[in-house]
Amino acid sequence: MRPARKRLLVEFLRVAFKVSERHACRLIRLQRSSQRYRHRRDEQIALRIRLKELAAARPRFGYLRLHVLLLREGWQINHKRVYRLYRMECLELHHKKPKKRISALRVAHPAPRVPNECWSMDFVSDCLHDGRRFRALTIVDNVSRVSPAIEVGRSLTGQRVVEVLEGLAQSQGLPKVIQVDNGTEFTSKALDEWAHRRKIKLQFSRPGKPTDNPFIESFNGRLRQECLDQSWFVSIEDAQKKIEDWRIDYNENRPHSSLENWALNAFLEAWNQNQKVEKLTHLLDQKAG
Image (cartoon, rainbow, N blue to C red; front, top):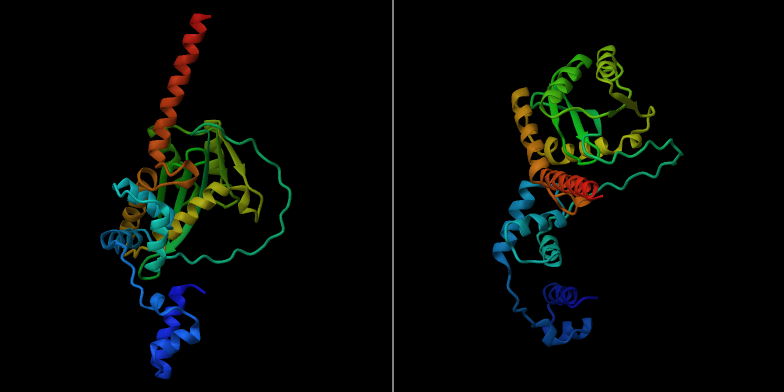
């Protein structure tokens, strides 16, 4: 048993049973010098206040991501100190224990290697303050994890999905493959005709197997935890603004552990710069040869 726990027991015996400190320490087998010890370490008041502010602004961030945000602000601390203060302030996240499911073999598709080669799409739903439902079309790049768009509306048909993708085609181009589930919007004639005309392959997941499309499922989980569950939407316009603000923050500021805590746009910019250097080196090697 740790000394801090023993000190609490000593205080309990003193108050509950009206015994002396000496007698209580003898019962608990704790030295009186340890009972009267008071630490002299810095209480880190400013750091604790800032940590609580960041945790309140981002309730679904654990201590590791909060540590990254503190480092970005210039705090010279390691993750162990952040974890200690994180526990002292009772900021721990509570996770549901996942159910064990029977795994089955599935056909493995070739993994994309470059950004903008393969996207994933899906829908999430939520409600306004008065109970009216709305839906959001979510899109994510499977390599860079960047979300090019989130479309929010009361009714999102296959034709609306086509319009969103056409808008992205004008602004940043389209991938070769789009992973989707078997929802009616994705199996509609409008999207099928558009994909055939654009020469884009629609890769459907098996019915009842969300693990076939893990990138969008992970993205939707972050959207649910960090935006939908934390926000109060008064109208469709308010939902569109708040979700779009979250998408921009997700792309530009949020640290991602799978990318060594890089922000997505910074990682994509560095990746593109590295590709340019490699191409230039290859051309120089060809000329020299």
